Length: 218
Image (cartoon, rainbow, N blue to C red; front, side):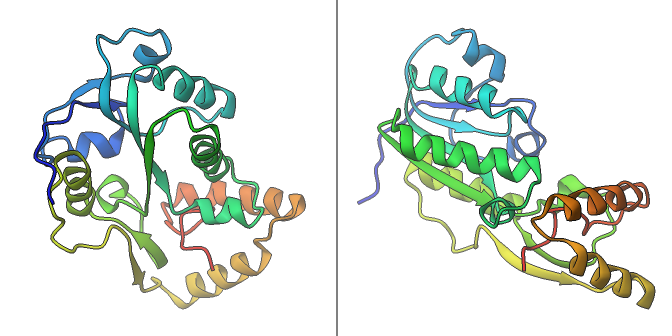
């Protein structure tokens, strides 16, 4: 049975790039606040659902945010990342490690009555300047907005997958070869992390999209 009751929805992270892209696509009524509003307890009521977008690269600051939010919210919907797979395999990239930390904090602390964790892939519209080549987990704006509508309004999704696997051709044989060498070097070890992060600086300058943890974990 579809739950037709109107739920109060709070969006945490009103300046999030992904939220700014889907704000006009969702059907539910919402209030939006910054992360600072939550941490300073500057909220006006208790909400049925909070949708939380990216916050800090500090585990401690994220823990403080989630703890403060639990005072006001019954259910949390945490927007996570498919890049958590790198953290689960022991890689040292901070963004996936923090995302995985938040997932586990929500599950283990049990400060909320219920939760949903949505791991999303590359949102192509937010990476328009990247030259995409290689294999990625990709998520469309439509699939995110539909999934959030389903959670907040009890609407049925149209069947669009939240995450799909996509492949883009390499621009040249040289790029394909360099990619193969990079992936051979890329390991969970500290030395590998240092070497690949140095290479990432150059790859970022030329707007290559597959460096670091952005590409699908293999």
